[in-house]
Length: 64
Ligand SMILES: [Zn+2]
Image (cartoon, rainbow, N blue to C red):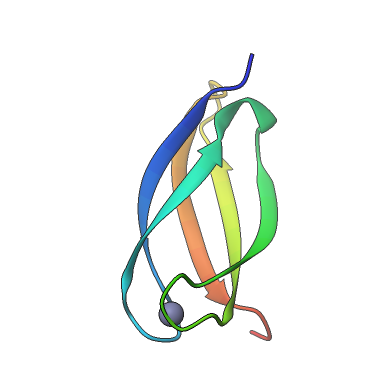
């Protein structure tokens, strides 16, 4: 079953608030998503708790 969660995040390039759609059932993951405002490629890392639930999402510039 797919469990998607809308999670607020901040673009590391333009500072705008974004809503990311996280697939919790996929566990820890890292992917690139273009900013909805400035279109820069954001490196998104999804962190899970030890219990396997969603913990927090981290956004970084792609070349950091
Ligand atoms: Zn942006």
